[in-house]
Amino acid sequence: MENDPGTMRFEQSVLAPIEQVFKALSNGTVLREWFCDYATTDPRPGGRIYLAWNEGYYMAGHFKEIEAPFRMIFSWYGKGEPGVTEVGIELSAADGKVMVHLEQSGLGDGPEWDAMRSEVNKGWGESLQNLASTLETGEDLRFVSRPMLGITFSDFSPELAAKHGIPVSQGLRLDEPVPGLGAAKAGLRSGDVIVGMDNRPIVDFASLVAAIQPHKAGDRIDVTIYRGMEKLTLWMELSRRVLPEIPATPQALADQIRPVYLEQDQELRALFANVDETSAHHSPGTEEWSAFEVLAHLIHTERGYQNFIQEVVGSQEPQYDDFGGNLHARNRATVQSYGSLAAMLDELQRAGSETVLLIGGLPADFPMRKSTYWRFALSALQAPYHFRAHLEQIKSALGSS
Image 1 (tube, helix red, strand yellow):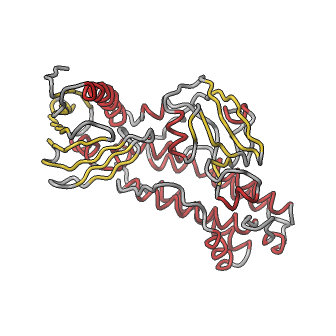
Image 2 (cartoon, one colour):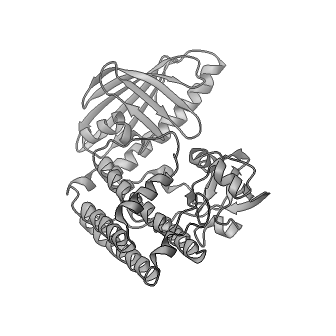
Image 3 (tube, rainbow, N blue to C red):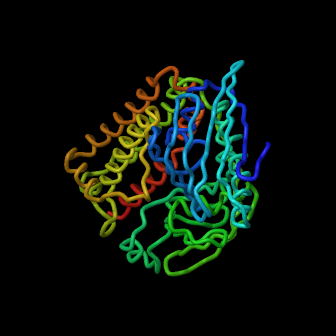
């Protein structure tokens, strides 16, 4: 790397088509697969570029020049930085590989610029390596090296806090710790609300990711929770992430997850085999879901997953500021619309079958977009923690009737 006082230069070789590399540098969805946690772009002269990271850093700028698939220039003004800089990227292809030539220019003098130089050097160095990894193998090194907590989350609101006697209204409420992983071993339980981790406040999922991002598997960190009115601090050892083997084709992926959906359908039908509809309508308490309403939520989840698949394949995924919660009225409306347990179980089964067929019918060249296919397939192969947590919720609702 050769630098002049106002410019820092970087190079990275990538074994991928030049069009894929250019898209990874300019498309908001693909930028999130290797570079940042949030991105929105309008890749044309004068168009916006906005990037953000869970740690709290963000930048804003606009494209000054762009010539697909060879070059782009955009302005860069980051949080807390002393001034606006400029990022220029040129791509050149030869012998089946692409050389990425990147420079960030306009860096000034003084201690505040020295601090920025350090961040620029570390940030682009690590990120361009990850660009090569995601496009060549699919693996996002940030995710591969990130430890696991082994938790899934449930709704949390001031109303739920008051109902369960929790004296805070911000935090992450646990659905069910995953057996054998760090959270369960540390003693966390369903219904616990995480409010702190690694001496940082936890108010949403982004703050939790930021808290564990600097750590590796085997590290021990403090976790502060509320269990009802009681505030506890526990020590958790971060678990090593075990990655499944990714099937080579969408059809092979569909074949692998089909038995999971069949097993879930069989479990639900066995659970409801001798349940009358009055018991299934019973709600354990105000704003608590009945067994019927949990089924409605599972139907909504499957529909939402199908929308996600379409967005991933189209490289246009929406992003939200936070989780907006589950609308109770939507569950009730679905229950009223289908009217019977048999109809809702059949609809959930059909939705699952449709998901499997959708995955199996994805474009044959989808796996060639290695970063996107790897991320998508990895999510599809995760153990059905969400289903398991709601299966227990159904049992609890039926048991209270």
